[in-house]
Length: 80
Picture (tube, rainbow, N blue to C red):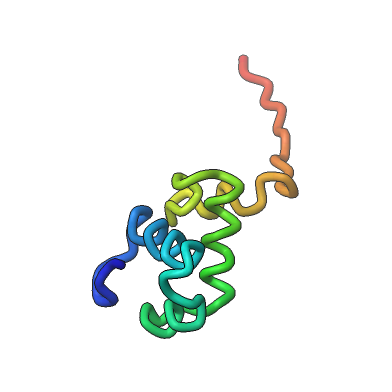
């Protein structure tokens, strides 16, 4: 298990998910230890299930989060 005072990285998030899923620590205890909400932990689980470990990257979160519902406006530019 990662130290509670460390910065969150993809590997640290994955380690906490693995520990909870492996039964080494209850979800409530992990959330209290790392000062995260159950909703945040469940979002990590969802992201790792959908996108793999790379889905846990915070810089990619916005891109991954609403991929299915996001519509990109199309702009036609007449370039001369």
